[in-house]
Image 1 (tube, one colour):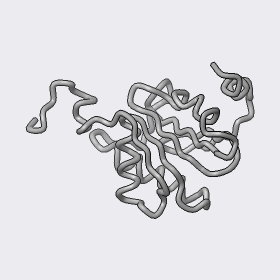
Image 2 (cartoon, rainbow, N blue to C red):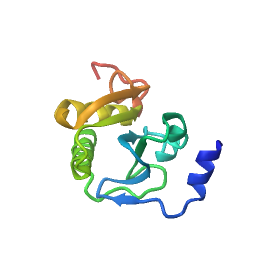
Image 3 (tube, rainbow, N blue to C red):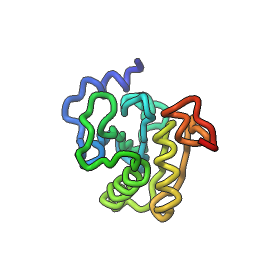
Length: 148
């Protein structure tokens, strides 16, 4: 763990935004960057991101409900996750009133970020996806095929 990550871990008063579908911890000052975790991860997977990005970035670290110990949302519909999550995150970005923001998504979070960019292009300045599967079904069933 790097020194910056340790100091953030020790800091108990990090601002948190709580929503129906996710929570967000906010760290740093400057240009807004939204970080979305993957299926088998949490917002902590980005803990060293600010150390690497520099002091002029304000990171918004999304923790989706139903993952990494955070109780699932009662508003979540079975078989309908990506679009509602993307729309809720777009609503969050609008509350920032900071103009288009950079969005970074890993795995399932990358799919959510692609939906945000597709459906709310005015809110996304830059987009980076990491380890995104070709189709979402393979995350649930590794034996899935395009036909199934």
